[in-house]
Image (cartoon, rainbow, N blue to C red; front, side):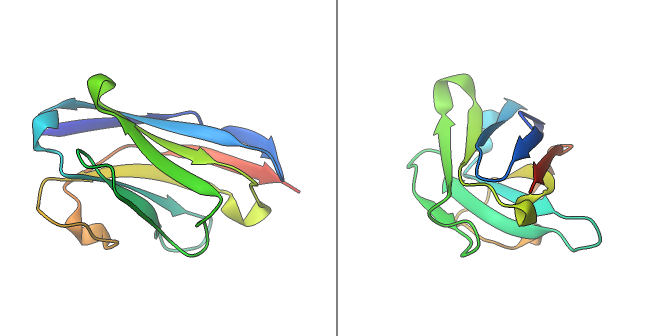
Length: 124
C-alpha cells in the first residue's frame, strides 16, 4: 500500500503560480510512476502529467505543457506540481496518483493509489 497526501492548493489570481506537493508513505519503493490529474466542477477527471519516479522523465497534457512542471524529491518521497501562468480554466481539484506497474500512462485505470485531492482556484 502507498498513501498519498497532497497539499499546496489555494486561491490565486490568473497569471500567478502555485506549487502542489504530494507526499508518499508506505511502500514507496514500489512507485514507478507518479501522475497528476485534475477535476473541474461538472467535468470528468483529466490527466495533467506524469513523471518516472526514479528516472525523472516527464510527459504533459497539451493544455498545461510549457506552464506546468512535475518533479520529485525521492529523498523526501515527495512529488511536486509547479504551476505557472495559471488560467481560470485551471481551476479544479488536483489529485496525485501512483503506479507500480512498468511503463507510464495517462489513463486513470493505470494507477493504484490516489491522494484525497487539493483545491486550486484561479480567479480572473
